[in-house]
Length: 141
Image 1 (cartoon, rainbow, N blue to C red):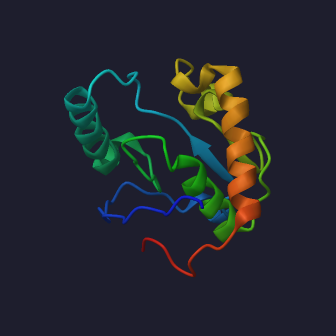
Image 2: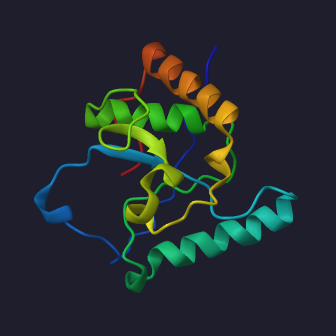
């Protein structure tokens, strides 16, 4: 059967960078610093993440914030497909965990994706979704 991508709600922000003219070569996967406990707690954290990403002082850009993980592999596969990136776990070209970036990722090493067996399973799911294909021509903005 497969997973359908959710509708997106676009929240424009002035918090962006031209990346020095360099093309996007990496999709970074992370959660927002808390482990899931309950839906109400997750919702509070989710709203805080949206506010953080909209603040230009934080120098972050181009994020998809998704409250949950059931379709995350499909979302990452779609972004790789649209950018022509390989479905490989790499901190240079493909996709990686936020924790893989070390200091370049703000030193955010306590990312819940540090669970290696879980991450390796996720890598397999992303590859499967990319192979499955069937993406819509457009998604999001």
